[in-house]
Image (cartoon, rainbow, N blue to C red; front, top):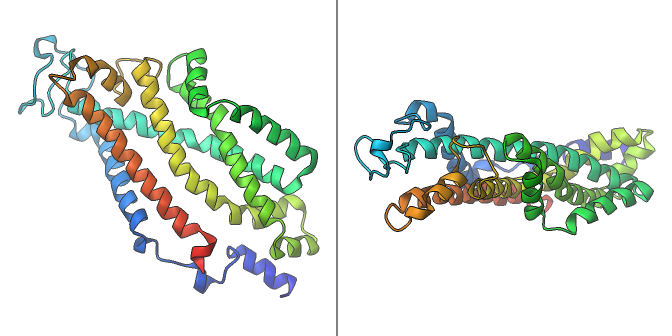
Length: 292
């Protein structure tokens, strides 16, 4: 195969187009996950329109009421509508969960690609830093950082960004080490292309699929971190509606008004299930073996 033909093949993802393309809508896991997550996102986006009440409005005269025509899921100990807080809590948790992945994904992928492609002392330095982070449980490290930085949305973003990039770095590095030995990379080098151009145009697009797949599970971890921080009182500052703080506030009424604590937990589980299905579907769709 000529160098030109190899380069053209690499730009198409390393596989002939007729063998690469698989209809995404025929992937059951991906479609099911998109439907579940799509519904959750839609409910969050439409919360201001479909919520029966202001989630911050307190009415102590109606505190701890059961489900009724006015309050479909009852009220909490401050008389706030549980359904409204559940919907607005989705806006907070989903927004942070999705946005918090972006910086670690970009930073980790770039550092992993550089480490895997160039090797040598660059690889040694980057991977020693990664090893330092992996010496601690990443989940607990995020919680500890938020504890030090203080509660609030900005602290959560910063803590997740400082910790989560290492996983993307390790994944992309391993993929690049394999990819740099492939024919299309060798052909690009022989064609006189600079290393950064080879890395950005030919190696990167062919190795980033694993990082994208991992991002789905990383969003789940981020949401779990947010909920845990809210439960511990280290997350979003009250009285903002958030699933973790809702569970924490309702735990003392678990034997009488159980749904106030259970429903936010169910929302977390459903969201996690949808993201897991998307991750499985993307892994199957983007897998090089499945493209053939």
